[in-house]
Image 1 (cartoon, each protein chain N blue to C red):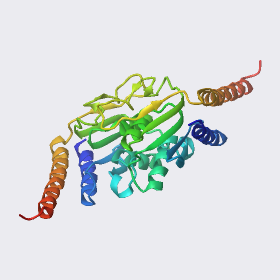
Image 2: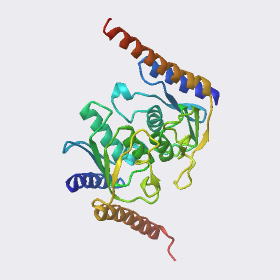
Image 3: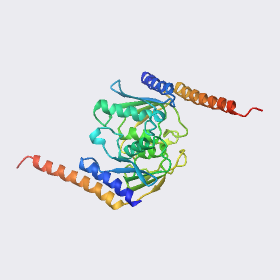
Image 4: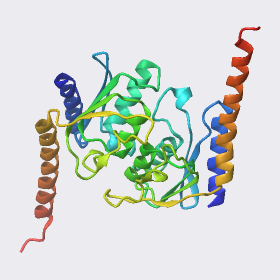
Length: 160
Length: 160
């Protein structure tokens, strides 16, 4: 389990390297990674290209099926409604995630869409996998952005 | 408003023509359609290729931005969690939809994600636009499938 989250974290690092919010995901079938993705929203200027969507799309292509039954998804951050919905639609078996997202997460933080029995499929949820590492990656990313902004503001302030 | 739903219905007819569940969507900016999509799940074998996702992706490409502020989305069926989430993520202003989806709709039927103030953006919802036409399209599609299945079953039954 932890090894697959390590692969998702590697995807998150790939996102960070290109200036994207560091979130990564992999889809696993029979102990093999069949889909990978990292957040590409800024580079693509496409609001739908979250890590999970890209990993699910690649997994569908690999299996030649939109039904990802017996597949598990590992993602470094708790999924948003779009990504949780994509997991329900693709019949993902279990979602393992790292850090919680109190602002947009719907796999524990703001309710739980994945286990909602009103939908035609439920996804099991395992949270807190490599949580510290996933959370630190995001925290450091946003701290660096704030520091850059502060420095920029200071350098552009009128001199007394 | 009705004209844009007519365009969404046209997309739904395009889906029906190729054997997909007939659902269509368009994204509108300043009275111009900037994104179109129809359900392509079966043809692509990709669980994420709902009408709304494709329309949003095209609209992002047209505007060169993941922020679809001041954009409205017209869709023939009430959105599922994935598509409602994509609308929140892309800052869609208003979602106009046709038929309700009591099994998976989250813009009135099973709660309303779009107007949920816990998220960082809310999408206004206008339901029941060309509702009869949108609902009939879906009803006829599934009736035809059931009729085909019944005929096939009857023809393959052992003769007495």
